[in-house]
Length: 157
Ligand SMILES: [Zn+2]
Picture 1 (cartoon, rainbow, N blue to C red):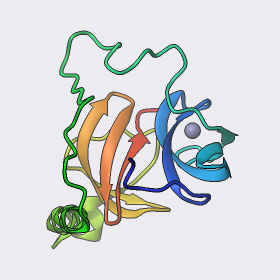
Picture 2 (tube, rainbow, N blue to C red):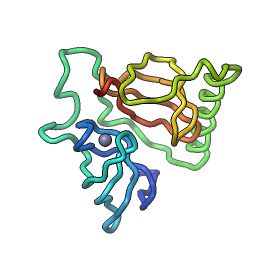
Picture 3 (cartoon, rainbow, N blue to C red):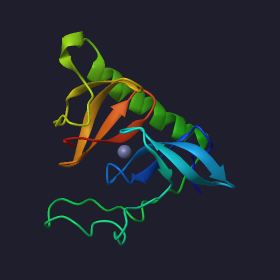
């Protein structure tokens, strides 16, 4: 059971046919509970929803034996609202701690062509201020924004 119900206008990770990466997308159209059309948050292109990259069989099939973290069976025993609320609070606290007391000049305006490092402060035109929490690979980073953590592209030409 997904704790987050998908809806039109909501967000979902989808493979972008233009960026050629699984990235954060906005849902444009749904059929039932499944998104069918999405808009890429990185390049703004519209395309069909695709949960995984073509030719990728499951996770961790790529890479050169590096640190690939796969958590296919994360135990999600309790899904009470208190735990979810706690997670949101923890995330907001983490975000505030990262952003607090930082000068405007400490933030870099997000662009897909830039390359980031963990801990970099980001200003995104849509999502606002964020902090890079994880370098997924040389083309993808995870950024913690106030409302949500998102996967965005980096280092694209
Ligand atoms: Zn894209």
